Image (cartoon, rainbow, N blue to C red; front, side):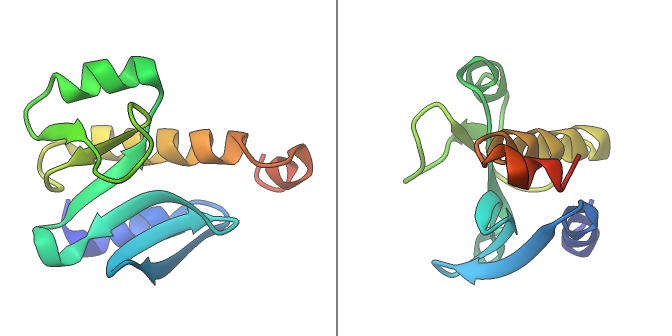
Length: 112
């Protein structure tokens, strides 16, 4: 998946907005980041994950602990080619779901 297709996919998810933070392109729901993309560094990006998913994901080539983010709760994926399109979409959706689950029930209800 190329960067523009990735961007379009992220923005197609209900309630998703984009913005720049720390010189990175961020995709957010209710101002909470679920994908952070380093466009100036080969499209390296990070997503939220569970501690259980963390071990499985970081065992793969091109995926490691995300710098400066909650330990064992965020992974950094070297580029958009590390995962196939289906896996990439699933990873983004899972990250978004984890972030949304931490928001108040009233806000969550807007996106169900």
